[in-house]
Length: 101
Image (cartoon, rainbow, N blue to C red):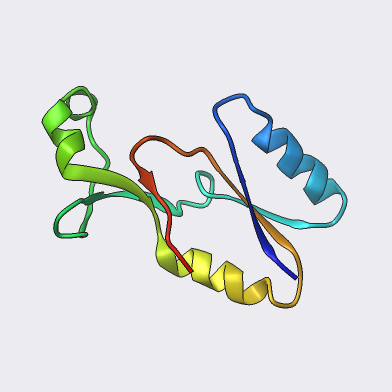
């Protein structure tokens, strides 16, 4: 079986596709709804609190931080996907880095 990653820009239809797959009986996860993504310091790799509005507008803040997909929940889904097909939906951004498996 497989862990299938569905990605695309805002309003591309990821949620609609996920809902259709769920209606067909598939297991579908959304990284936003399930809190799988977080900000972390680019250099220390330590998680940090979500930025406040002013920090989002600060180019230096973005230079020092990345929005990343947490490795542990993805690895857990990857393990579970050995027995069934699972879909994972995410909106990528220029600052998103995904966990490699």
